[in-house]
Amino acid sequence: MLKLQGSMVALVTPFRDGGVDSEGLRGLVRFHLDNGTDGLVPCGTTGEAATLTAEEFDLVVGLVVEEVGGRIPVVAGTGSNNTAATVERTLRAKELGVDAALVVTPYYNKPTQEGLFQHFKAVAEAARMPVVVYNVPGRTCGNILPVTVERLAGFEEIVAVKEASGDLGQVTELIGRVGGRLAVLSGDDALNFPIACIGGAGGISVLGNIVPADNARIFAAVKEGKLEEARALHHKYHELIGMLFVETNPLPVKTALAMMGMVRPEFRLPLCPMGDEPRERLRKTLVDYGLVDA
Image (cartoon, rainbow, N blue to C red):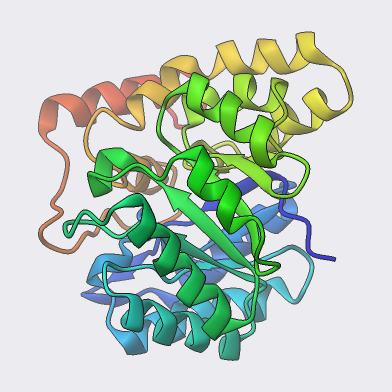
């Protein structure tokens, strides 16, 4: 049975000279396999999925699945604000061998709670594969409520929810309603520790791109009842988490990985390189954490 838990990393997509950097991506996957990451999530927001062509989606997802080789779950981002297109991409991800699909709540067209229910129902019934509901109101202008997720929990294909509302009260209600049936995953690194403490199964993380071993340890320590250890790591990385969101994600995390020598600081419009001042602040923070040389 598929278990989505612990540190699942929202993987960046490295580019080189305008195209996907396949070898850079393979290197990132190996880095996570060597450092205890519990799952990889390619082609999400952090992976700049909105600018990937269909061919590039196939390349990225297929490469990650191949490199992982079944050792940890691969959950591909397949969502859009078009239900038919979401179904099509989810089916394609299934063909490519992913373990689950991460499906964001539709953005821009602002569906009602009933519309959200019908959207995820259609994806689940058409794809017949594990689906993770992704709630991120800050990007979609829509908030899927716990009562709606509870309705969706009746479908065996719906296995988890990535909750990035930033509202601990909502997360608490959600876990109370579906925690016994769905894996509730933090979608906000600043809340990984508290969400784990109230019953969250893990998180889909940006921070895990940079410090995968310690990020995984936060979730493992909570599960082992070692709350002081987990709390110490939570506080240790508070400043770094803030810097990873000083500008729009994934600008800082990809820039940080470039400073660490792991990818090139290459983006696609409408995303662009960081401004000089926040970039320098990020560099100084990485130096302070011992992640890059002074």
